[in-house]
Amino acid sequence: MTRSPSVLPLWLTHAFRAQRGPVPWSAVIRGGLAGGPLLLGAVLAGQPAFGVVAAIAAMLAGVADRPGSRRAAVTRLGVPAVAGAAGLAIGTWGGERLGAVALTLLLTLVALVAGSVSAVGPVASTAGTQLLVASAIGAGMPLPGTEWQRGLAYLAGAGWLLALRLALPGPGSFAGDFRFDGERQAVAAVHDAIAALLDAAGTDGAPARRAALTAALDHAQDALDGPRLRRYASSSAERRLHAQYAAALPLAEAATALAWAGEPVPERAAEGPRRLAAAVRANTVTGPLPAPSRSAPELRALDDALLRAAEAFDRADGGDLHTRRRSPGTILRTVLGGGGREYGLRVALCFGAAVGFARLLHGSGWYGPHTHWYWLPATAVFLVKPDLGPLVSRVLCRAAGTVLGAVLFAGFAAVLPRPEGLVALVAVCGALIPVATRHFAAQTGVVTVLVLALVMVGGEPQASVSRIGETLLACAIVLVVGHLPMPGQRGGGVRARLTTAERAARAYLAHVLREADGTVHRATRWTLRREAYRTLAEARAAIGLAAAELPALARHSAGTEKVAGTLERLVDTTTACAVHLDDSGRITPRCTRQLTGLLDELAALREREQGVREYA
Image (cartoon, rainbow, N blue to C red; front, side, top):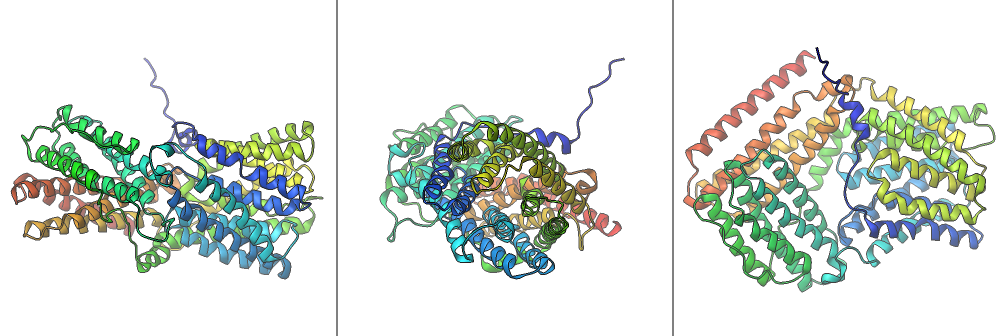
């Protein structure tokens, strides 16, 4: 009898996953020009400690330096930098004026706020991370200067990397207006994703292609939603990009409806979106677009969308459909809701416990001649952040990456001249960060080498052994705290995102049903559809991370996968109904049956979930 191969659990296999893609050479160049030159300038000026602070800020900004537009980078890098500078000032003030107990309480309160705010989104999460890491550094790292001087040094480091992001050319920079190369690449990727979905219509790969289209639209929406770099209204290049993005919305609607229909699409249908993508990428005219067959409502919608796209590309007038507006009340509900409360409490407990434990060990003399107690809470920050991966995966990757990085640095420290060799090592590590961010263990290894080099440049002895010990201790603290029972319902972050997705799906459906009564407003429909798919993608990501936790944690989000799948089918069906409504002025019986069935299924799943929660 042959024995089937054993299947590793998801919580273990997740630790071996890595992102793929081409090497981001522009980010590599920025990373190499960030921390190293800052540190070198500070050393030459006789202020190495301030150079260490600036290099740390540049390193954290480099971790957050993701592909996208220049304008979006202003918010993506600038907001966390301001939060980090504030954290450094708070930590410096508390470290100089408060005792161990009061300092622990202060930093725990800061962690509660930072953790709750982190539930708002990626930028808020990065800001929360930098706030806590910088507050630990400010409280424990021996640095000269006052709170505001340290904060300015931090802002200078992050601001230098942001200046490089705004000034240096990136891929596609010379195909048009230099400022909008990131936006151009993002919008072109949307049209490519539409073509890929059309190719996959009627196959098993259609759901994955539809998810890829959602991701491309999300990325383009973020790229176009950055702050303006000029005082006055949009340039012609910017208006053209808005028009090209707006033209993709009806195309995406038609492609989604064709995928929902489940019938293969002629190859000719995907050629038009591909030509649109090439025109966006090269900043040229579209030329003639091949017309698809008009034998079905979905194909007629695609043909009409292509005609409108050709006109929009020439007219360069796309409106403001890209903006994603969230009111302060919505953000506040997220912070104070179940997801924000759970996130905040867990971050506060981990960070506070790490600070208290580190201060206790430091006071007992366990640290010996080293005063790196702030490493323990700073490490705990990264380990407790659920948006960086499942808990066990984070712990395994952090431990492995730290050990590898510390061993490598011990070898480098034995042979490199000081300080010039260490400064060069900082520059090399900064260049490696954009590639290393594809896997948490690799990122940890590179950051460990960089941080240990900075510590030695700042005048402290080699600390590889203590770095390993404190990281393993932080891993143990986070593992224990991560499995402690918390007030309220566990899995609150996942359920909060799923509730938001359901609310957006129902708002989209309600609008389409109103259009069936004669009130047609397609721009509003496309905006609502974007929000429905985007919130579903965010819920899916949270569910995927929760499913890769240990069973003791994963069980708290059991059943959410089925709810998300039902919501996705509901939104897809709503999109198909909207296309048929535009074509014939009515919703087809098939759409009506499927909508009714999906709403009943969703109600049954919610009722079953409520029963399980009450039983638990």
